[in-house]
Amino acid sequence: MYGQEILDISAKRAFIISDFDGTLSPIVSEPLNAEFEVDAVATLVDLSFRFKTVAILSGRSSDFILSKAAVSSAYMDGFKDQIKIFGLYGNENLKEDLRLTEAVADIARELDSQFSNAVLVENKLISVTVHYRNNANKKRVIGESIDSVLSNYREFTVIPAKMSYEVVPKIFKKKGDVITDLLKSHDGGYYLGDDVGDLDAFKALKMQPSKATCSVAIRSTDTPQDVINAADISVGSTKEAVKFLKKLKAEFE
Ligand SMILES: [Mg+2]
Image (cartoon, rainbow, N blue to C red; front, side):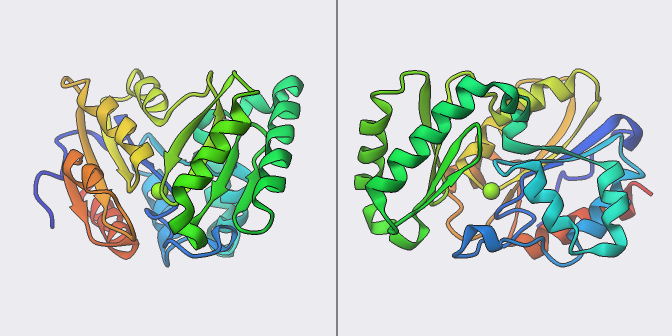
């Protein structure tokens, strides 16, 4: 399982960035019920005292991530103070854009009425997630419906994710943009993810060979083979991902 994962780097100048769903949180059939893997919050907080930056980079909102971290009450304060959350792929500042949030609300409403209760349409203020995990056989039809709604909203596009579609404004930052930005102020670091959206982050790491970086794929439910192939190493589950983080904690004492 482990190979080239211990980077020759000072933790004080390095980052650990992780995706949430399927990486730090086991995939569940009801997306709003996702929870942190056992020990994940505590381990991230421990790591934050060693590494320059420990962050979660997710399509979820930072409020959602914080509410889930709150379950680990003993570590909540440390989490709040120490862990950076790039919610909605680092685009949460767009929440101030009323024209945008109104368009998103309209899109969410239109999609909701198209699908009735067959799929969960989640309005995330600046993006809409259409979860089809419980209707995976309708993936194509759902995709076509989204395309037809978006023909009236030219400033938006669709990003396919694991068992969901993300409807996002075209100006949206992707995970790789956030990583590229972080690399400017770090010597390198780790990125953990399990999904097609994480490929963009893996690529951003690879594009800067002068930095010491390691991408880690989590082989959780439905992880695409492309993601496993693109990563430097892979681990077998969200539990294994936490174990990997604990290993880093021991190595970068
Ligand atoms: Mg994920």
